[in-house]
Image (cartoon, rainbow, N blue to C red; front, side):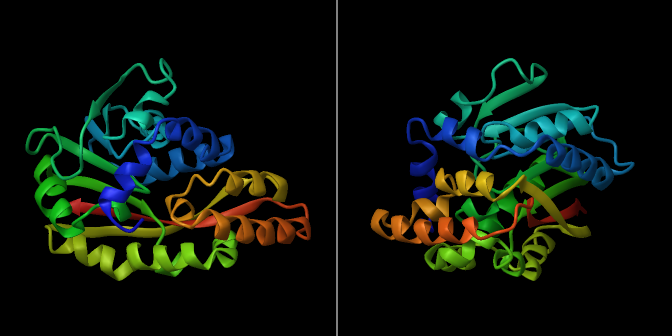
Length: 258
């Protein structure tokens, strides 16, 4: 699942939105962490209109609403993902069906764009950043990029048991330098970069349930018989783990449109 078309097929599959919403939900304490992270990243930049690009079921749309006194537009092209959002939970948000390659937003009207776990699905990253993100952001506007990178992937404990997933993500995820370069050539400066260690499970049992859902696109790409074998080894490993929370690292880049 290395192409944009493959990702589209996955996220348009009936029912995948509900699976994604249930399995990829973050603990309440982690949601609060990200709300605070976004607030600090924005700082004193005036944000009247924010866009959550690739909003999925609205996980980080909600974080934008909590963090900012701004109107929020959630842009998502997957019908199943939009259908699975928690209706009524975010009444102030405008949901728009749209694609990163042709954002349904006028030039220079946005103050902030959030990109959470979507960068690797862009077919032509440099073109999307230069032609669309820079187009809709005003000068001085911010792009917040939340993504794994080559430098963090091997710290995901489950990746040790799914080498095929690791190989795919090393192919499609950026290095930190590459992400910064993609934005630099498109007219952005990197204002900040940090690695946020987010709690994703309270204990190994919850961790197993999260991976069992197979809600990550790199796990969907593994043939079923390979998945079964790899998951059995992962589950056996988790049974030997101490009863402890599971944290994973995620990059947050703050880019400013120049």
